[in-house]
Amino acid sequence: MSGFISFVSSGPGDPDLLTLRAVDRLQKAQVVLYDDLSSGPVLLHASPEAELIGVGKRAGRPSARQDAVNALLLEHAGAGRHVVRLKSGDAGMFGRLEEELAAVRGAGIAHEIIPGVSSVNAAAAVAGIPLTRRLTARRVQYVTGADVSGKLPQGLNWAALADPAAVTAVFMGQRSFPELAAGLIAHGLPGATPAMLAEAVGTPDQQLWRGTVEELADRLAQTGPSAQPALILYGPLADAWDGAA
Image (cartoon, rainbow, N blue to C red; front, side, top):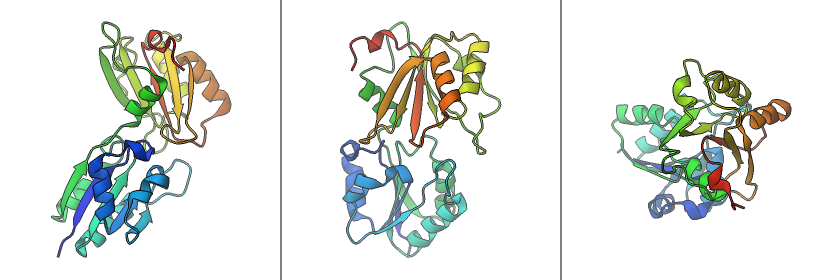
């Protein structure tokens, strides 16, 4: 008898940002497969009887293989259990949701997707800035700064990424940002474009750094990536920072 899988978005890490539906599914789950960034206080909402299984992926650390995660989903749901696949941020944003959905749908297992607060929205809220601004920031775009090997992806749309009227969010980009910044500047984006590095948003360790694209590239080239998960925002945000904490 097949079970049911809830793909639950846990938000950036603060349990207060979980949706009511996410909390409900965690409380009802018999098995929770969770990402590293979805651990900690978020898991306190799971039933004490639930089996908790860590399947997170972190750059530079031992990580669960995607085929192994897929196999666990099918094994537990196939045994008739209600499974929660707990993903950080919003499950549909750079979280390999598509691969897991393909495996689940291929096995004919009933499932649902529960959206959540993206780290982009959370970072902007913590910084006290809007993601869009009338006349100067009419578009928001999301891009990953790392391919499967951890390097800057090939075939980037440089014209779009260097658009001075767009706010760009770079996921998993600490390591590659110096190279990305050089490409952006070569394609016309001013080096003085405002940039923000948001680390561990939604946790007690959260930190924000504000500067320019050029300054952030220099900083990361010298220090390298931190151990904390981080998001980079750049674009026409300078005026919105006035008076922000």
